[in-house]
Image (cartoon, rainbow, N blue to C red; front, side):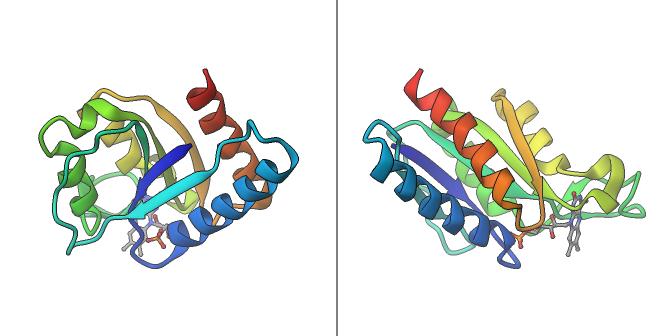
Length: 150
Ligand SMILES: Cc1cc2nc3c(=O)[nH]c(=O)nc-3n(C[C@H](O)[C@H](O)[C@H](O)COP(=O)(O)O)c2cc1C
């Protein structure tokens, strides 16, 4: 089982996760070893809870300040996921972070996921743009599968 905690403000990450779940189901039908995906959306109304099992975190990038391209790196909108990861020892069960964003933001592309990786001392596993392509889904699934089956 691949467990994912994610946050999505405008729906792109939600779309990616939904397609990842569908892809995992299709893989499972061909190969019973292929792990399914269980995803939980975190939002501002989510109460902090202890995560007992290993999971991955998916976070899009929203930054405020500066010009949005090469300065200003204050996280906005996604802090409820950060707070959830920071709750008690939840971060110790995080197997890694997958980031998304828009390459127009240049050096700030996927910066929030990189900041999480640093803050929580977990690996930055992969990135994709916006809703992600079909090949992003396959690539990310294979990375997560490799970790949970290792
Ligand atoms: C106000 C705003 C700021 C953003 N800042 C960044 C950024 O600094 N870096 C980046 O890679 N993408 C940035 N993005 C792009 C989003 O991360 C991207 O659209 C993402 O797919 C949104 O995911 P969601 O629809 O799941 O919320 C920004 C988007 C908005 C609307």
